[in-house]
Image (cartoon, rainbow over all chains, first blue to last red; front, side, top):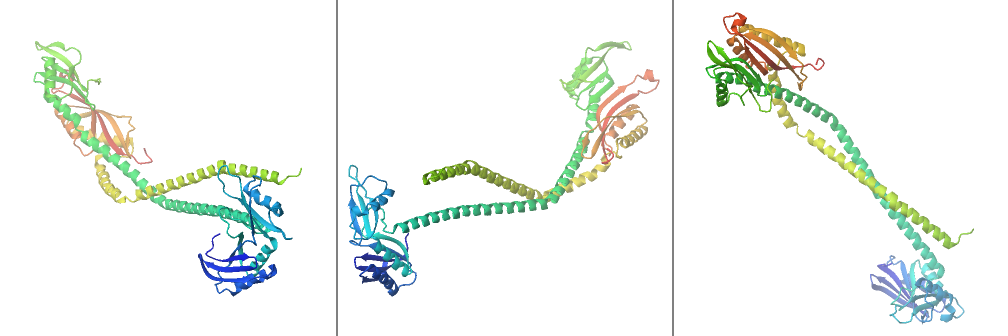
Length: 332
Length: 192
């Protein structure tokens, strides 16, 4: 984890250098020597206490210099997975590293290789009392340890020289952190969903209230519109009757005026659809039809059957019936 | 049987896979459908509210129409028959036709109502068949007055028949006028 301010402790055999680093810049540094692991604990505490830096420098990173931290390139290891490599090296640590009566803490990582080359692992180890002393010193100084790493290692994953128990504790803590973050994210989503749901519920309530308030006005408006529609229908119907009331009488007058002088009507029937029937007597029935066609007083005049010859006062006349109106219509 | 760590892990992974599948293929689609339906319903309600508000926001045009219609409805009174039932309207129309015939030396032979259920708003249509008898002047005057009087009477069928003077023993020609007339009356809501 990148920290803008931290302690960088470099520990060698018999010496220690403490640096206070702020945003990549060393703001304070001091060196000291120590004789034993017990003294190393005190030296770390003293250096941190003497430093004239703000109390915001809380985290510490430790690098162990050679030969305090032993380093080996191992080429005859079985091709195990990277996660199993550290267990393999730890299990055979005495085979790969010098051991002077103390337990060793080790870590290892495969180095990048080209095709055809043998696999080589970089392994580091340090005596456990040194690591314990560093841990104790840092805790005593009130700092939080980020990691203990071998100095000068690059080109591979970061190697850690923390005790096995500490690493396991950190892994557990990391898993716990991950779970907490997952739970937090799920809770956050649930909260967001809840907020959106509540917001929608409130808006729906608001809309329902507003609609409820509008219902009487809408009902009144609809009633008014229905009343207006009824009134409109009433006025329209009477107006339509007013416009058409004289039509039949006008057609009757026009038909009567259009007859030739030599014709006399005995009956006339007019219907609203323009059809009708006209009966009478004339010198020549076809002359009547021709006259009616010419004046266009009625539409489509045509003789209904043949004219019946008749003698009136010694003169020949024809009795006729004329149908008129739409050609498809049938006069009653 | 004692479960090893590997067995426990396999059981946990399997359970997690089942739970994940249920979440992904059941709960999540159901939730998405519910959320979408809820959003659509909310949108529909919003539109309903907007339409209702818009509907209520145009009373001015409605008021103008109402004023015009009010004048039209007021002017309807003299143009329709009095009476709120078919019988009352029929009685008024019969009286009017009798008066008209008498005034023009004619007579009413028959007035008969036809069944008619046509409505226009609160107005009901009355359709009658009427038969008059009179001379040419009387019939012409009746027709003229029927189509120009204050009450709107609309002839929809007109039959004029001349009778033979020799048959009636009258010195002048007698005409029969058969009319089908349509008029309107205002029905009271409870007495249709």
